[in-house]
Amino acid sequence: MGPRNTSSVAEFQLLGFQRLLEWRALLFAIFLGIYFLTIAGNLVIITVVSRDPRLHVPMYSFLGSLSLLEVLYTSTIVPRLLVDLVSQGHAISFSACMVQLYFFVCFGATECFLLAAMACDRYLAICSPLHYSSLMRPDICTKVLALCWLAGLGTGFLPSLMICRLDFCGPNHIDHFFCDLPPLMQLSCSSVHTTELLIFVLSIAVLCVCFLLTVVSYLFIVSSVLRIPSRAGRRKTFSTCGSHLAVVTIYYGTMISMYVRPNVHLSPEVNKIISVFYTVVTPLLNPVIYSLRNRDFKQAIRKVMRSKCCICGRGLGFPHQTGRVLGSHIGDRGIFFKYH
Image: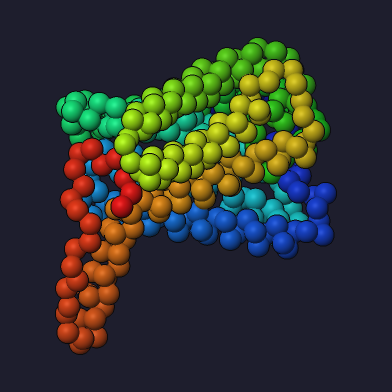
């Protein structure tokens, strides 16, 4: 991550939610519950997508990759937050802080690229169904996924390197619950003008461009949906589309408010509240909104659970019974606005 600067600070103190000491037990229970549900929900998606051959289509490949990303993304922040809520010491070494910062930026940028790619995939499936199978072949889907991850890895490198090269002479108290860009720049005793400008430009390039691409894709999707003759079909599709846009808006809106605002500093408490949304809340909402509300996916979950029950039943000596296969075969289009 580049050569270490000449900073005299060997470690930082994460203040976290110290102003809410009387609420630490409640905060710990809330964050632990959300983290458990996030990990469990996303692991269910990863397991089902990998085990059910009917879900081996581009749309569910994107969803499986998004779930893996959410597990890594939230695990970069929340475990450390939970430890700080129950322990007396809140020290984090300079190197560990830089590593956490890198993976936070890396996974956050990857999610932006992935959400934009998923929106484009749905645009092609709904607005160009006759050409979808040729435009989004499995090999192209794999390349798009690899490009999203590689772009995220590259995006995280430059801000982390710039922060790593700043001088930190003291104080070393980070008024946040993780090593984030704005509070670290506020602690630096060297000029941060170039670093702020670079992060601002990078944020514009990643956040705003990906958000614009996602919104434009959904606008074309809505325009296509308006031509559906069935009023019930339009209502159900708009319900799903609205849920997707709500989650996307929460994620992008909070991220943009944090990083696309040069020379504007909000209070630390406001920063923490905003950060909770994109580090804790959206990783929980994504599996619910994108997968668990989808009927085909729920049928795949039942199929996996039924197969496990049958295996357990044979192991216990119960007669094996095969249930009927629910749902129809999911073709290459696999539109996630499909309801029955």
